[in-house]
Length: 101
Image 1 (cartoon, helix red, strand yellow):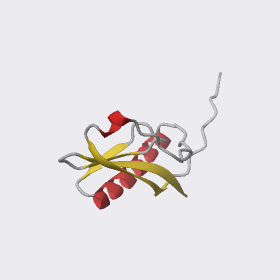
Image 2: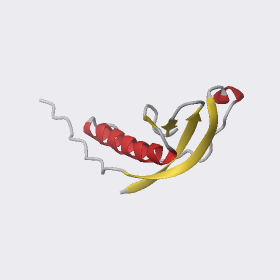
Image 3: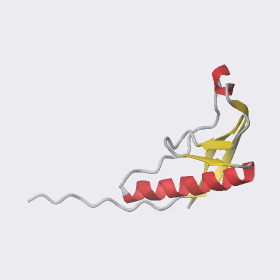
């Protein structure tokens, strides 16, 4: 199955791109170019989701539709790009019921 997640790419001053998805805390990535950043973010999200499934954690639904920036967000950033990225999401395995004796 695929889902589209809102992703924020930041072009750092004198450096590379960084990316994060507001609906998936802790999943971040970096790349030298915007194309590389998009590919790395897709791979990062898909890997993150796979680990979540392995640990029995639910996959977050894509819910963010906008991003609010503060002046301080631009301190070390040239510009931001807000986009939607379509990623493969593994099917969650049903949880086994605990058996009590």
